[in-house]
Amino acid sequence: MTSRRKLLGFGLAASPLAQAMQRASRGRGPLKITKVEPLVIRTPNDGAPPESLIEMPPVGAMTGGVGLWNRLDHSSPSRFKGRTQAVLVRITTNEGIVGWGECHAPSAPRVHKTVISDLFAPVLIGQDAREVEPLWEKLYSTERLRGYATGSYTESLAGVDLALWDILGQYAELPLYRLLGGKYRDRIPTYTGLGGRSVEELKANAAKAIEAGYRAVKMGLSKGSGTSDIARVAAVSEAVKGKGQVLVDSLGAYKLYEATIVGRELDRLGNVGWWEDPLPPDDLEGYPRLADSLDTALCAGEELCNRFQFRQMFATRSVDIINPDLCRAGGITEVRRVAAMAEAHGVLWSPHISTGTALYVAASMHLAAATSNFVISEGGGLLGGPLGNKLLAEPMEWGPGFVRVPEGVGIGVRFDQKALAGVVAG
Image 1 (tube, helix red, strand yellow):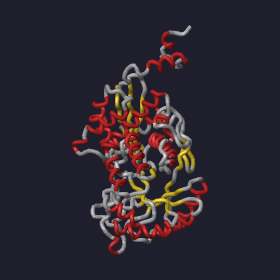
Image 2 (image 1 turned 120 degrees about the vertical axis):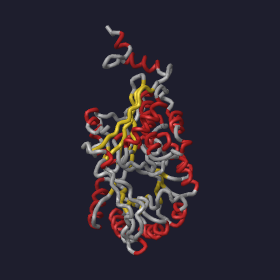
Image 3 (image 1 turned 180 degrees about the vertical axis):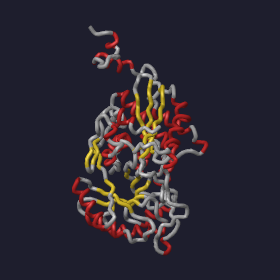
Image 4 (image 1 turned 60 degrees about the horizontal axis):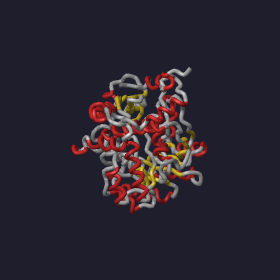
């Protein structure tokens, strides 16, 4: 005989009837948020004091070029002594549905933890978790009039936003891409980073990547080197010609006049898919001038954090491709808006995925699948690292050049709790 406890779905395996009753009861009351928990994660999780991890070139460091190419280095960001850090956000509801999100937080994750626990959580507790976009606007408004609209503030908001979309998907019993309107593709094409000290090593690594299945490889183009590093790009461009393209990333290294000189050399190669971040992100006047002077597609946007910043880039025709970061630029809610704005301006988009977990990748894949102007993604190889599939109860499917969109409800990934405990730092 079926007990009342099992009939109401409290058993370990709820019957189809109990599941149907639970679904039928939904919508009659709010899905209240009862707990918001930010978790700092790190690998390797060796207990080093967080403040001991930051390193940068010394004050006054120069680019090391010849003549006027040797000037103050203005584009080397902080690094973290071989550690990878992030903040996960766990949100619990009164129905027991738990959603997970992630903040891009490589340098000072305790800042994000504090923003979430001290500022966002008091606003969220007791609210209906299904109100994803209204809650986004409420959280964005907490400090908007005090001048906060970017950086750790929107990275923290991104973590909350992803967790709320994850909850909504579980509540609706649908994968995230369904909530976003459906998917254009099952497999998301990805590119890979390319290393090599010598030109021959670069060419060999590029050939291996193409043979493995990648159709695009990305390499750095150094600051302070004038046009000498173009030879390295040219060698890779030739090595993959007819089989793939080379993408070039300069991390905001150049002044406008320098970038114009270097960019014209890239134009001559003819097999450069994009030139990423040739200028600092705050050179808003330089980007449209550079775009007008070059044939090579310009890509930028990983540093931008909201649709208002992107609006200016679109209005001035500054770039051909954008690469916003879901875990930096306000999550699914905001990047979805940015991608739609990009499409209206004839601009393609590519998710930026640098350091983080498999959750980061999965959420990006859902939005990539659900947008028509998506072109290619970063980050597939992350799934093979210590914060990738090793953290999951069931691995995501990926290989050289692709990641398959998760089919589970919500974001579609669930953490292995033992593996997760091993990387939680606070």
